Image 1 (spheres, one colour):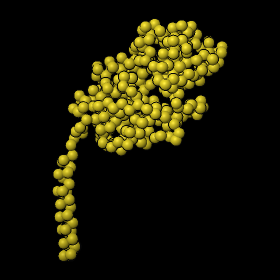
Image 2 (cartoon, rainbow, N blue to C red; image 1 turned 120 degrees about the vertical axis):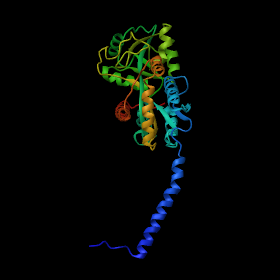
Image 3 (cartoon, rainbow, N blue to C red; image 1 turned 180 degrees about the vertical axis):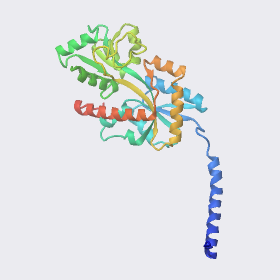
Image 4 (spheres, rainbow, N blue to C red; image 1 turned 90 degrees about the vertical axis):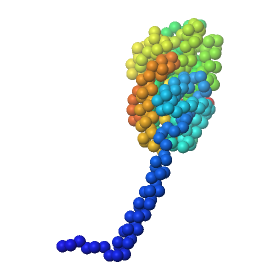
Length: 334
């Protein structure tokens, strides 16, 4: 049986469609060829904190390494305010083209519960690129506070619940939340004295107005060296590089407990998967460089290589952890 040939109108219509398709492909080809390879211009890393802090230092170290490997400038853009919400919202609103990133920290997960109405949904509005590292929160005492060890702190806190006070950089700050977690773990109750920033908290602890302070390791380092503060414990799984003689909280009788400041790169949710994958690979390379490792060590932390999915899971688990704490402790941001 022979195949049926198309009729003249059918053949004409088919020829027209073929020609139209060819013309469309021809017109699209120059456009496709004109697309520049990523990255074709400078990349911006937004930081929700002022310049000079640990997050800023980590962002600049990673940014420099990325600039060298990608062949484009990487600019750190500091946007402090509203507990990092200003920075987060600016990144969410940016073009999802791989040229606007953010060096995020714990506040990204915590702020979804701390602020009402919820300012953003990190799991829907952003995509995780790579975890970068972590720095422990430390608990320190003033030189004249009369508290020379974590054991002494626990004894004093249990003898008079709610009396022994500690300073923090503010309500809802990562150090504040870390101590709230620790209080529940240790079965103690401390009095929280919030300040507007770590510097003000440290000033009053050194001056004797408050006996204890919770901040990240980098902030207390110069005051420990001068003898004005004594670190009682690092709330981390591993000893911190800048206080190698200070026991971790696990070594002090609380195995499995950890409260660290983590850092990681995120981008707007619709950023192309190929660009996210490229950036992830470049960050992994950066974390192996001597310069980035030394910078992380200098702020008292450690690098954390890993997959983008691991970072996504961390944000999700931290969100749930903070949500429970905020609800139970009725924590309100400053």
